[in-house]
Every structure is written in structure tokens, then in C-alpha cells.
View 1 (tube, rainbow, N blue to C red):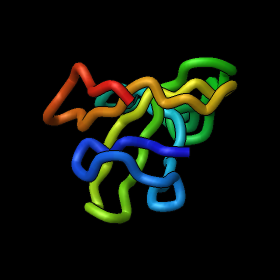
View 2 (tube, rainbow, N blue to C red):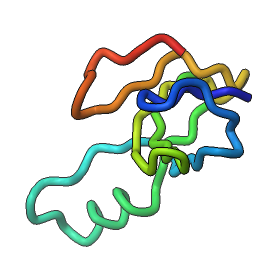
View 3 (cartoon, rainbow, N blue to C red):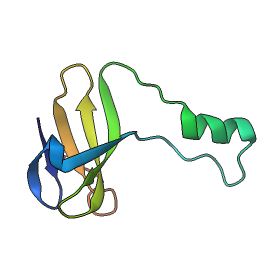
View 4 (tube, rainbow, N blue to C red):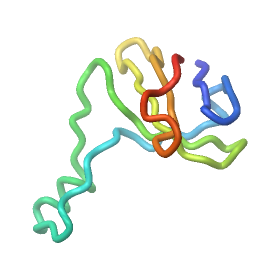
Length: 88
């Protein structure tokens, strides 16, 4: 499986690390329940999912949209540089 790092280009998945589903941070002072949900619970639904990935070559984090059923990566982007993302 190839995933395109926004810095390095297409990479084999062995050169990357998936850190899982991207979630929204809780408010400034979350309750214990909100904090637990943020840390431990994921939707983990079949279909398109936004995930954090780490590239071992450039040592940088990026976001990817991946279909969890087919493993197809529809786009990747560096959140600070390109909010729209690049194809594949």
C-alpha cells in the first residue's frame, strides 16, 4: 500500500506509522468523561476516515483520508500548510 507523504511523496506503508483516527480536542477544561472519551474512544466506522500518520523519513506528522474498507487513501495533507489536501 502506498501513502503519499506531503513532504516526501509516495511511500510504502512500512515507512510510515498510522496513529489512528483524528478527533476533536475537548474544551479548555474538560470533564473527566470528556477527557476519557477523547483519549480512549474512537468511532472506528467502516468507510472514509481521517487519520494521523507519521513519516519516518522526514519525521513529520500529516493527515490522510482513508477508506477503511478498501484501504484506498483519497488525500493527504499537512494541516499547517495545506488545509485542502493533495490527491492521493
